Image 1 (spheres, helix red, strand yellow):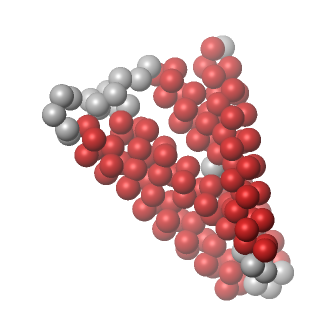
Image 2 (image 1 turned 120 degrees about the vertical axis):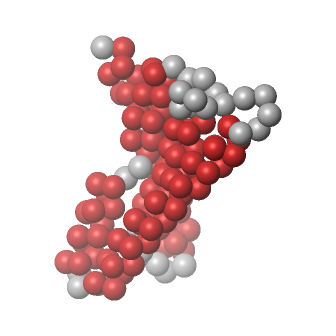
Length: 135
């Protein structure tokens, strides 16, 4: 039961963070006349980076010790609430339904490529931090 509460609390925090980031970025893009879902893309990329970083820094052989409860709270709760692939899917579908196949394709390719790159960069940074003297 405790893990469910941790996921719920983390999910609430991650969702609020996503709502703020997406709204802020979308507002900036709208000011420039863009209808591309930049807010969702930024949330997915930054969430992918953070989960890669945290997972590697707190792995069993890593630099920082973290309980399984903390990992669940952060990775499943916060990161799960923060990243938005359901929103990404719906927004991509909307672009397709509006006949904007080019932007839909760019959204799919950039989301997948940038999120994979971000999770890898987070992993590389954490692996580098783990290798410093004193670990």
